[in-house]
Image 1 (tube, rainbow, N blue to C red):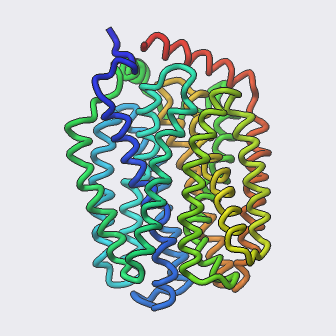
Image 2: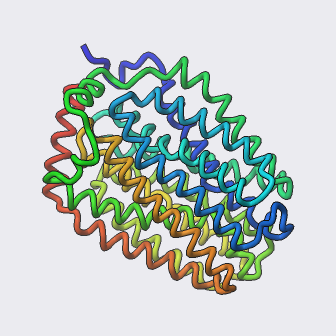
Image 3: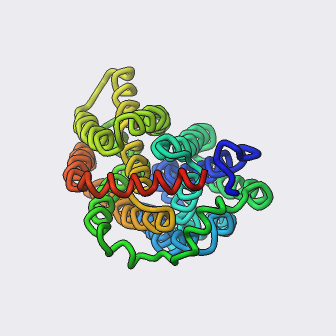
Length: 411
C-alpha cells in the first residue's frame, strides 16, 4: 500500500526541501551583496567587466546543473541527488574565500553552480511527488519561500558584515555542510508510486518533443527565460543600479532585502490564488504587473517610504511569477517526466539568468544602467506574458486530469 502525503510520519521532507531552497536563495543574492564592494576596492582585480564575467559564469554552472544533472533524479532518486549536489555546492562555495584573482573566483563559482543548479528542480519534483491533488501551486510556492527567505537572510547578513565579503561565502558553505547529515538521515526517497512511475519508462528530454508537449515546453521555457532574467538581473545588480541612480550603497542593500521580503509575501498569496483560480490566469496577471512595477522603478523617487513600498510590491510580483511557472510545469507534465520538465524549464531559464546580469552589467560598464536596466526588465515581463498566452488550455487540462488521477492513485 502506498503512503499518502497526509500519513507521512514527519514533516522532515517539507522542511529539508525548504532548507535546500534557502541555500539556493543564498546563491541568488550573494554576488549582488559583494559586487559593489569588490568593484569599489578593486580587490582580486575586480572591475565592472570582471564582475559581469563572474556573474555570468556562475549562472552558466547553475544552468548546466539544471539541464544535465537534475533529470538524473527521475532515474536515480531525488534524495541521493540532493545530498550529492549540496555537498558539491558547499565545498566550492567555501573555496571562493581563497580565490587569488577574478578568474579563479569565477571558476569556483562555476563549479558551485553546477551542484546547486540541480537542487531546485529535484526539490520541487520531490515535493510534488508528495503533494495532494489540486495543491501543486501551494506546494511549489511554499517550498520556494525558502528561496527568498535565504535571499533575505543573505541580504541582512551583508548589511552586518560587508565590506568583509569572505564571511558571506563562509556562511553559505558551512550552512550547506550542516544541512547534509539531515538530508542523509532524515530525507526518505520519494513515494513508492512515484518511484514506480519513474522506472516503468525512463524519462528523458526526447519525451518533451513528443506530442502534446513541444508547444507547452517551448512556451514554458521562454517564460522561464524571461522570469529568471528578472530574478537574477535584479538580485545581482539592484544595489549597483540604485547606486547609479544616486542612492547610497547601504540603501541599495536595504532595498535588496525589501525586494526579497516582497517575494516571500508574493509566494504565499500566489500559491493560494493559483490553486483557487488556476495557474495560467494568475501567472499571466503576475508577469503583467511585474512589467508595470519595473517600469515605475525607472522613475527616481526621493521619498524613502514610497521607494521601499514600490520595491516591495515589485518583489511580490516578479519572483512569484517565476515560481508559478514551476508550479505550472508540475501540473502539465506527468510524475515520470516531472524533474526532467522542471530541469528543462530551469535550465533554459538559466540562460535568461545569464543574460540578465550580463546585459545589466554591460549597461553598468557603459554608464547607462539607470534607467535602461529597468526598461529592459519591464520588457522581459511583457514578453513572458506573450509566451504563456500561447499555452493551450486543452493540453493543460488533459495533463492536469492525468496528474490528478495519478496523485489520487498514489494516495
